[in-house]
Length: 263
Ligand SMILES: N[C@@H](CCC[C@H](N)C(=O)O)C(=O)O
Image (cartoon, rainbow, N blue to C red):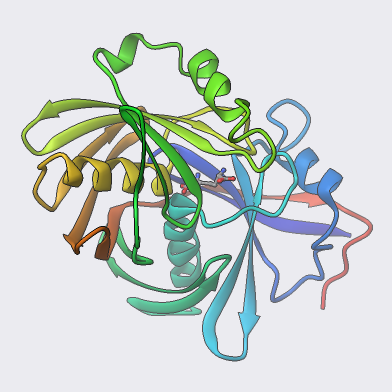
């Protein structure tokens, strides 16, 4: 049988979405997810997201990285999942859903999805750089001329260093553009390459900018578009963190997958 899939993107971070309320997509088939995300032999995406029923939430999002492994929280993917849920009629303009790191609230306002992220209790400083978890682990380094940087090379050097090699980390390179704006480029774990944007990475970079005196909301440019991050600073951390930006459907199609049945 064939499954219908939908392709979504949020500031250029792209995802294959499956309405798994209607299928029994095999949740542990790494090879299948990897194949669907392959940009030459599959649909092509930075990750795959299953939208599922959940007894206590509007829906559950199950997120996989392009390498086929179950991922941690994905900020752009979550904004796409909210748009997908809206288009499927699962929600109207507000959502309370479950992701890898727990419950999230979100709202839809025209083109924009506003996603509430979990509080960040602390930020570790490593030399001049920072390490924090915004649902996924992120290393943040401020640089000059981020557009000139070899993000693949520099990102891999940090992602595979002794401290991070086992669990991995995403790596964000950040340039100050003005008093209220930064430019972020991210090497993504699980894609193992630079992506056009990473929502949890943008959030991490904006919070570190907050530590350096930026006021909320911080405007963030990425290679794939613009996002905004609002937050309230607490003693050592942050609360009321919101990631705001567009998310849209690009196309839909079907793939023959005999191992999957319609429910
Ligand atoms: N693109 C995502 C982040 C995805 C998580 C990452 N690949 C990891 O494994 O930590 C986002 O938008 O947040």
